[in-house]
Image (cartoon, rainbow, N blue to C red; front, side, top):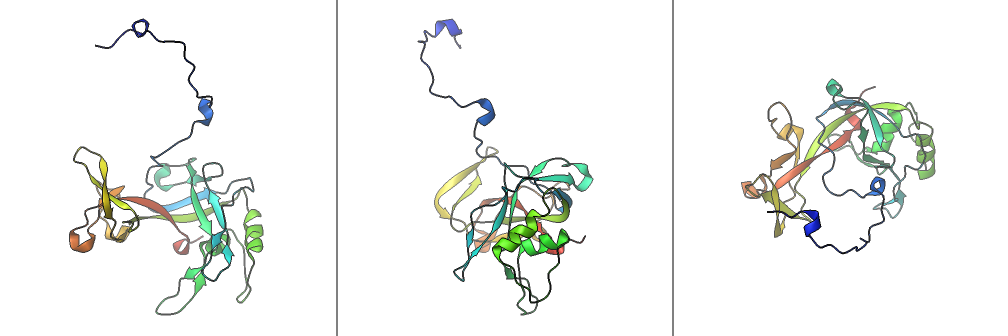
Length: 225
């Protein structure tokens, strides 16, 4: 049986915590998985949206807009209105990758697609510096843009896997790395009408068994204005 506070015999020790409740750090958890579909976002209104530069394989740098907890995007329209007015965190960089089809090389970045959705134009053959990319994006602070969201599940080959603990949770398997298999919405079946937050990885010919969490991705390339 528990004790009454007066029965504990407590001394008047002062606990060494001086952080206000409004400033308590947050760990773990993360936002709930959003279902795929068309969303409309509003950009932050402040210019402090930049994360650390990204090293490029050619030895140069690329920039990334970091829509984090301090400067998130705002969802102004979501499928069924379920997430309207909620903050949304994500990153968008000008790190180009091949978007060509059938062996054609077309190097394009997510930031290129975003700027096009915001109404920017660029002629064929015209190249921008990182500073120009940043200037162009900063011109649109506070404005809205549409973007499709998708989901991907990745069994990380650089981290230990987690498996179902049989009690409704998951537990880490020390010394067993993920198999590297990646899944997209086309590969995953819905459960009760929605894509699940976690799936069981079937990599390594079905022997992996890792519990893999899904994450939302911007699908700028498939978004139409």
